[in-house]
Length: 205
Ligand code: ITT
Image 1 (cartoon, rainbow, N blue to C red):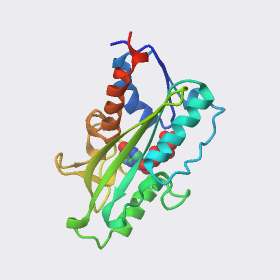
Image 2: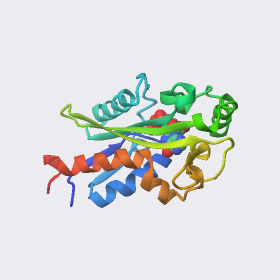
Image 3: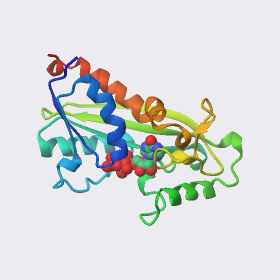
Image 4: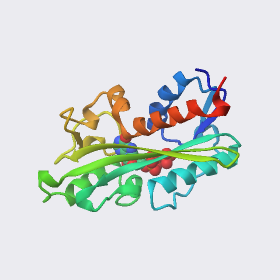
């Protein structure tokens, strides 16, 4: 298949780019750029209260600016015992002074008395694809797991070291990146977007 379309990935997060490109490239998307190619686009305020809203805000803003189809994701970790936190605030949970390690520690501290039976959580990713003619599509992927008692593993990013996958008996950060990219919430949303892309009239050769 050869998709005759230029696409902007609306992120500066290189971890996301590394996950997204290998799925889009085999589809033959003609030319993929990222926000690093558009330094004039500064922080797009994620003012929504859901992943869907924030992904849509980002995709639309970048599409309007570039005039090109734009793909954005909003993602995060929902923990049942914390009433869904950190949720849409995953990237800035605990304030801007914390790094990934600090955010993981904050989650573990908040859950210090939570028994194993109540430590369920999930990574959620919504991908939004905006077109210059106003069409907007969103697709969701989720990945279920348990919150550990201490961080383990060095791969991935963000909350991966405290997210345990029962099926693999490993944290997400202990999985090789290629394996994470096969099963992750982002991969699942992205494969749905890839199916959508392949079905659109303008992408047929
Ligand atoms: P962009 O807005 O530029 O895309 P970002 O890192 O700010 O990049 P989000 O707003 O989607 O991205 O925030 C997602 C946060 O959720 C991210 O910073 C991590 O803390 C967490 N997160 C998302 N996906 C994750 C993953 O695969 N593994 C671990 N943590 C993840």
